[in-house]
Image 1: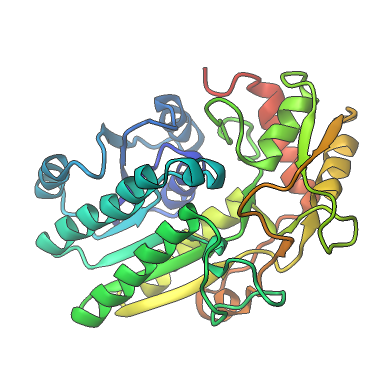
Image 2 (image 1 turned 90 degrees about the horizontal axis):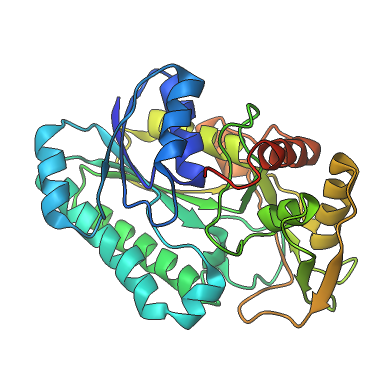
Amino acid sequence: MRILVTGGAGYIGSHTCVELLNSGHSVFIVDNFSNASVESIKRVEKITGKSVNYINADIRDEKALNELFKRHNFDAVIHFAGLKSVGESTEKPLMYYDNNVNGTRVLMSVMEKYKVNSLVFSSSATVYGDPDTVPISENFPLRTTNPYGQTKLVVEQMCQEVCSANDKISIVLLRYFNPVGAHHSGMIGEDPKGIPNNLMPFIAQVAVGKRAFLSIFGNDYNTPDGTGVRDYIHVVDLAKGHVKAIEKLHNKTGCHVFNLGTGRGYSVLDMVAAFSQVSGKKIPYQIKARRAGDIAQCYAKPDLAQQILDWRAEKTLKDMVNDSWHWQVNNPNGYE
């Protein structure tokens, strides 16, 4: 298939491009590089031995998207382009609604105009908010605790309504849990701009000496060690989930929803201990007050993806930490 990947130069997007290319699909990337690097695309080409076309454009730029869809006969779109920091979203909610919701609206309107009827959307477990119980299945109530999660939920609702209005469209909503790790080659990985928002790159930067200590936000949650528990999934497993989704459901109309997670939760202190063991480095940390919008625990019930997509997470916590450390050591300053 000829697949347009929005945000394809980013962390999850670049790994998904590798898996798509390795599965025989052709890829075209649109990215505004606000939180990504052209270097990641070059490295995707090195890993796969295949060329990747891309343009520097924002998905809110309807004129640019029209030109792109006019020139290329895309079979499907995988949509990653979006802002993703919970903390930043509470400070700049309008920016998040404009980028994540309005950007998706523009993209979907251009897809409709050019009759591209297959979409895989990068959603998030944040749409479940603070769940009553764990593990979380796809039919749990949807109630977000921050503007970032709300933008994902609004886009999901928009997708459901588009499918109801047009019986030719296939949309897959993939609710990720916590992507970590990097490609085993050490050539592509998570390269946050500025201070990392996610746990694993922050721990890695402390281990490599780039940062003095890790801040742990809250140690008084109702969890085994008091720190937050999350379902960490290797980014390569996650990327393979997108390939399965596009291949299995490309011609199955309607809106399909899947959790992509391992089904197991690890605490912040579990992750610190695992990283310290793999790297041989002490990870100093300081306990800080809880952050607004954070929850105690969140992990998936991934059975539906196993049944319908024939997908399951295969990589272990050790794989996640090994690959993160390999990436960090080989790229102490990311792609620069």
